[in-house]
Structures are given as structure tokens and as C-alpha cells.
Length: 290
Length: 283
Image 1 (tube, rainbow over the protein chains, first blue to last red):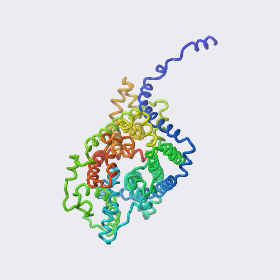
Image 2: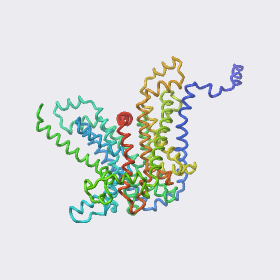
Image 3: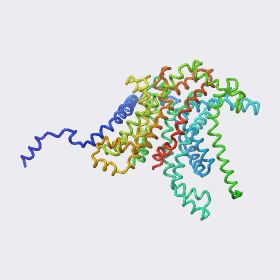
Image 4: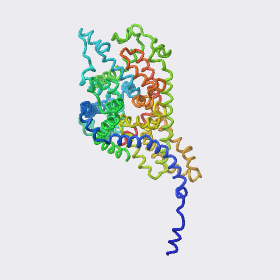
């Protein structure tokens, strides 16, 4: 026994490559490029950013910055009100686009355009429409009433509402498409049976559509909230955070600090959102990795 | 032929009542952009639905680079093109390799890598942009096309890996086993069995990555600043720097910039809808 034991110990561990099958060696080699990208451009930046945001003084500075408080409130409004309105419209329109009609098929091809084209030209187009002096909207108001139209983007409430509108314009087609795919997966004979039983439109929605769609709907809403936190374009290109920095959201505020060379403040403002974002991210990761 | 009943007419009318506002809501900003592009400077601001003298003069100015803001139009277009193509190719290579490794070779720790990638997928893009900017500075890549390419590959690959893994999990294991029986090496399985079967998903993911990179504004605007290095969207954003920006030229350039992604989207719509929504719907 003792001999065997000492004999075992004298045999050097085989080199790593011989303990792995060729398939496993290939497996490691093929996953390595992504791991490198992940380490260099996710792990390092995130750790570095957190390290930059470590000083408590940053959070005191944020607390004393009225723009930060305003941006946090704006972000909440954007997410809680904006996203829910968007998803409700998407839920409604997904039913509309699920109708089997040729003209609705064609309309759905057009409807996807805002999502298929880049946001910068279309958002700037909206911005020009609402220009107080030369925009087409105020031009119409003038020719109809003889009065000058309002300076739309100069009112923070109107400007933020319009930024939400632009966001909805851009991403509504995507979510409608997803929910429509979900609707089309529901067995059609359920609806036929309900039709025979004389169910109303609302009853069909309440007892057939919604139960099969609710998980998808909630997943989509959460996913949309996470992504909207990173929506820089809708606010920046429309209002630039103005007037007087009153329409910033966290996404544009971080970049604003960055442009002002206050990197640690930028990171601190992001860290403040983490307690809300990380649980959502974890929840979504668990849901999708099943 | 059956005459429509009153009820059919009422249903159709109600559908139209939804359809017409949806059409207007979708098209107005795009049509407004198009109108600017085909209007002479004086007409553009008149608020008419169709210009009195539609013209292609604005396109001529853009294509001949006859304006201060447009002097680098071709090189910026080229930059956008090269970066989008590079992101598409790199994302495909990295994501296909990773998905094959996780799904078919069952590499140890593959599940953890998948979860880490998914976690990255949910980092809001504008939040990662701040440390990414500094990181690229530390790597000495600022103002270099590689910074934008690598940043976009980082953002595109998690979703790419996830979609490709879902698709490759559906391929029967027996295929690989049969190939191994016949003495195929791993590389041969990858090349001769895996890639051909994955083609539809690969087209979808390649298109996704190319469009993502072509359309990206925030990262491009942070990472590139030199006039001859920037991409088209950054150049469009720079128009706003001046008070007297030539809107009709901005909208014309924007229209030209929006055409390729729209065309690609419609050309590959079959793949996009199947390949990309399948993943999102599974929940």
C-alpha cells in the first residue's frame, strides 16, 4: 500500500494538454477570442470605472448638483411612464398587425422603418419640425391662426415629453413585432372556440391572449427599461439636455460629465443607478439563460 | 362574389381608423427629411407638402462635396462602411467560434461564459460608454478606427453568441457523433457540418452586427474626433455646431446615410425576423 502510494506520488501530473481531449482543446481555443474581448473591454473598463468612482466626495458632489437630481427624476419619468405607455401601445398594435389583411401586411413593412433606419437623421428631422422660427409645425400654426407657435423645445416638460415621443417612435416597431410573434404563436382554435361561445373582444383578450402573452410582455417591459437607461440619442439629439440642463437623463448626464472632464463624477452618477439596474440585469440574465 | 356585410364594413373602418394614424405617425419624420432633401433652399421652409420645384441639387452638392460641412463626405462614408464591415466580420468569427465551443463541444465553464455574455448584453450602452472611453484612451486607441470596431464587437457579440447558441442547440447531436464515427476532426465538423447548417442564423447575426455598427452614434462620437476619421453620423451631429446649419444639406446627407441600412434590412428581412425574434420570444 505504502509502496503504491509513494509510487503514485513519484509520477508527475500529466501535462494539461494530454488530460484534455482534442475536442476540449478546440473548445478552449474557440472560446478564447470572446474571453479576451470580454476581459479587455468589459471587465477592465467596469473595474476601472468603479475604482474611479470610489471616493465618497463624488457622491457628495452629485448630491449637491441640482442637475443630477433633475436627471434622476427625468430618468424615472422616462422609464416608468414612457416605457409603460410604449408597451401598452405595442400590445394594442400587435393585435392590429396580427390581422390577416393584405394592406395591413404592407403597412407593417412601412411601420418597421423607424427601427430599420439610423436614429440621427430622423431625430434631427423631428427637431427641425419643431423649430420655433422655421419649423413646419409653427409654420402651419401661423398660417392657420395667424399667431406665432410656441417655442416647443424651450419648455422642459414639453421637451422631455417629446424626447419620450421620439424614443417611442424609434422603438415601438421592434416591440410590436416581438409581441405580434408572441400572439401568432397562440393556437388559433382557442379563438374559434371562444367565437362559437359568443365571447366578446375583451373576454377573448382577457382569457386567451393575455394569459399566454403576459410572461413575454413583462420580459419585454423589463428589457426595454434596461435598454432605455442607455438611450442617449433620443434626449441628446433632440434637446441636448437643454433648456438649462433640465431635460437630462442619466445616460446623457454621464456623457455631459465626461465631456466636462469630470470622469469620476460621470462614473459616480452611473454607480448611483446600479442598485436598481443590477437586480434587473441579473433577473433578465437568469430568464434568458434557461 | 359575396357583397360585404355591414359588419365587415364596420370592422374594416375600425381597422382603417387605427391604420391611418399609424401610417402618418411612422412616415411624417421620414417624409419631412425626404422633403428637405428634394427642396431648393428657399422652398424647404415654406411648409408645403410637396415643393413647387423639386430638385436633386442638394444631392449634387453632397456628392460633389461643395460645402464646408461636406468636404470629407466620401471619406466619412468610407469610414462608416469599413467599420460596419469589420464589426460584422469580427462579430461573426468571435461569436460563431464561442457558440460552437459552448453548444457543440460543451467546453468546461461554457455556461458561465454564456451568462457573463448575457450580463454584458444588459449593460445599458450609454453607461458602458463612459469607462469604455477612458479604457480606449489607456490602450492608446482613441481616434483610431480600431477603438470603435472593438467597442462595437464588444456590444454586438453577447447577443450574437446567445442567438447562435440557441440555434446550434437545436441541431441534433447525432450529426456530430456520426461525423466523429467517420473520423472527422473537430475542425472538419465545424467547417463541413456546423457552418452550412447555421447559415440562416449567421446571415441574421452578420446583418445585425453591421446595422448596429453603421447606425451607432454615441460611441463613434466619443471615440473618434478627427474630421477624417469620424463616421457619417458624427459628421451629421457636427452640423448642429453652427447656428446657420444648412438643414437641407444635413437632411440630404442623412437621407443618403439612412438608405443602406433600410435596404439591407429589407433585403434580409426574412432572416432578421426569423433569426432575431425567435430568441427574444423564447421566455
